[in-house]
Image 1 (cartoon, rainbow, N blue to C red):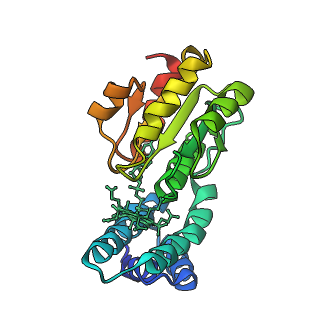
Image 2: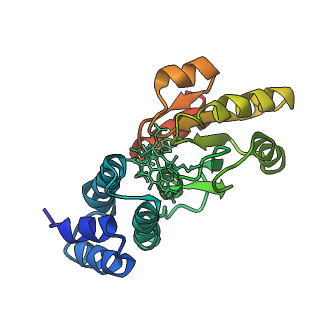
Length: 212
Ligand code: B1M
């Protein structure tokens, strides 16, 4: 197994250049692109979160760590990209209103693109009306909502209500996810699907599109 400790410590210390160098080296040694995420990026971000809670890290350190992941995602995205020509379906994706976290969302996007889906990424801090307008304009098979804060999870419910009010709820499947989100929450707000991590999102998206 490839040693990913250089990549993990580069992300944790927010060194984007070293992160990219370490990621390239790991791939050259034969690491699978997703191993870089599960074996280095996720543990580094978890540790950053622990340090933040302990008062050893502040928002600038978290931002630097987040920035250090971006180049690595750009590096692995084409490696995960599907080769098929027919898109598996279109997905509109975004982080809900009030929430600026996008690392998990970007990973979900990378995985969906790797699974052959066309993804329209609305970014972060997306208000319900913007999701509704995108569903009307893009006519996706799936609307995918991410939230990382307990305080922004209600934005998912608001978005579903806005879809219903616009008469669009039956036209699109809605999947939700993000660290504080649970299957029970997804059921309570009437979402069509939930997955705890990006790796399992493609299988859910395929199920939702096929109506299984
Ligand atoms: Co913030 N933050 N943050 N933060 N941050 C958390 C989430 C927190 C747990 C840290 C902590 O206190 N321990 C805490 C939330 C507590 C809570 O509500 N439960 C927190 C807080 C409190 C805050 C602020 C309020 C801090 C402040 O300002 N006082 C503030 C809020 C800003 C806002 O959004 N309005 C804030 C700000 C930030 C930064 C901007 C500095 C930065 C984000 C930068 C960025 O994203 N570009 C940041 C970061 C980096 C974190 C931590 C450290 C890391 C998050 C991350 O990227 N994880 C985080 C602590 C932690 O998670 N350990 C924390 C790695 C990523 C791969 O995992 O995003 O969970 P994750 O995604 C996973 C799954 O959740 C899932 O798949 C992904 C991969 O498997 N998933 C989906 C995600 N979306 C999905 C959608 C799906 C399916 C699966 O279907 C559609």
